[in-house]
Length: 551
Image (cartoon, rainbow, N blue to C red):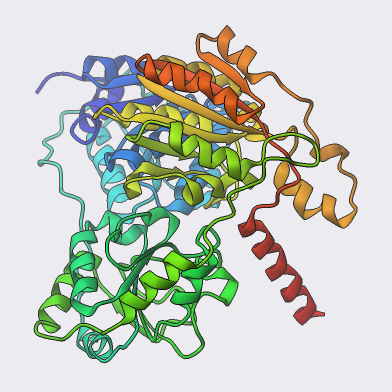
């Protein structure tokens, strides 16, 4: 066996699982990065350590392939914590390779990194000279099987030392939960007797590859279908209602509320999906199929712990020969066609700036059809899933929603851009506040992307706070941001850019696309803060109702 350092052994094992590493070089990971290059891993440099894990996280969301982020110890590590917490909360497999205190003991500048990670819910695997490869493999397998972020720590005094020889078995395939129990028989009987069945798919169904089976099951039953924002268009076809929750239309939500039996596959039924308790009718029967061990919402009447794809296949067998519900899809189609959709926006606003709804509609017509959309967190977060055509679930990468953060968008765009291999254009939607937080990695995106469009919803404010708290009479001064010329900043870093004050100004973006859409284009869109997103109004109303009940 070739003699390797501890860092070399870590890189060797990682290379059997992944091809891409994102990060910033420092004392604690310089030997690892040297070894990674020798192993043929592709390193994409980012400019802030917080981008290392965010980029690796988005790489997985866009491609389904594992990636690693890397930082030095101490401040490099702590800079990555928000992105690490987001990956844990969102259940994204990712590996953070970081330096750590030497085995001889912590130095004055060291912090207890394992304790910090534990506080975020991330496990730490610290390599040794004797088992650097085995511990690395253990960390990766844990990340894949548990669908979570892990920290792989290399003590500073071991990084360049020779590693012990190890005989390692071939990499294990990620385990798939397959715990189909007797509850499927009861689920099949409930679905067979439904007159208005609905199948609601979430990201778990997408990750399990259950889309085709659930789509066939819906056709077998004559069911309507819907998806969470993270399973957008997974069940697209006859009877598809779109997104369940605050990003959906009221017409679609009304139909979902009339379903008598609802099959939920791989969705956690978050408050946003459930429209804060108003999505499903009080008499509907809810069946949940999930890889977890228990239901995730009190509305669940029957829970089946199973892999969504396996369970859907079994349900198809159990329902073979059953007649589809009559009239349910035809009625839904008529109501969807005649009912109101999303508000188209207005041509005029109180401050003369763009209505974000009208802007989103116009952008959908301009953006390349083959697109993967990355969204930062913020008030604008619903405009893309509401108004843009996003073909597949993996083409919508929503970051920050699990941990309720902003500022990870640019970093995530770097990872998603590296993941795209089929000529798609990366589209980043960001607010001005979050964009400024991650501004250093605009340079990273420009360097990494073959074709990227950045849409900044620039309202010169933290928009969500304006609507939540400014509307209550609280001072708006801390909520305002001086107007930044993002187009000027972008051009200085090597991108093409334009300020978009009117819809006609989108012609600059159209010209860039027509010329081949090569490189990065930043559209600095000056929007009004006078339009409140419907999902936020819904959330604010739910808070008021909860406060009234508690009072």
